[in-house]
Length: 394
Image (cartoon, rainbow, N blue to C red):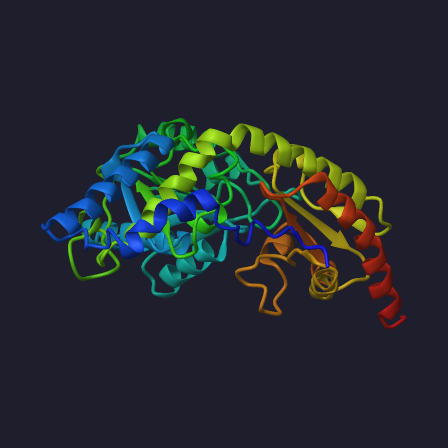
């Protein structure tokens, strides 16, 4: 059976080049990078080279890169770590966080935790029908207690690109008049392989991402934190990662992450152009099916994520039936698809609950081809028709 993988926003296949550079650090250069002996020093030197390579990609300093296990951990470290630091400095006030209603659950649930524990006030700002936030809404939401603005770069469900550079300029302008600055964070997990992630151009104080979305392994992530940003560590133990993240570093995976980042630099232009063309082809062909509606605006969305609403069909059923024909996609976010709750992203975009359950997401990668889209174009209408015929008549 033909296999078409269209779920690259959930996770990607590890590149052979990435796996190749990782292998020696499992069985040959396997020393603990905190140890002073030669085996440990070799691991440490290579790990620090990886840190420099990632810093170069982000246009940051090497000591502004903190290695973590995932984007989720990075987000927790920044949001909780900064709020705890601010609480120590400003005991009389409750810090205020501004974020959007379409963030990844890692941001949403961390903010809810801080709110429920009365450690922070949180404003979840609305989005328009395309899933995009308003700069005016952000500006209006800022109070004298605001210390964090956290807006994702690319939405993981519909691919909407947020105007991060414009938010960065807004924060910079506002901070000129403040004694306690606002720190600006972006979750760049879905952007890192496709869009400009120069932290200075974006104007962010912090940026988080994960390796397994860019052809590195699962279990490795990173957090960029601008110098002099106050953070309280969330893991206690040793003094690894400049005291911000205790625990022996995952050297092989860190090296793999750096290699994946390096491959982006070498191939991003050609890969992105190819993926953009595939996206247009997919939208054109799938949109021909009656009762299928494209979500978001293709002009303001990332090249690799395409989501549709399919009238009269359950998204989960559609995913399962497509998988039986060798096509792998997802319904909503893979991180929370096991729940029966409707997508908070689509709900925030104003889509009614009944229609939300008919969503499907296709996410493209460097290994996809025109033939993949043509195969999907043949199979998709048949599966939709079969499922509609099976549905109980009203």
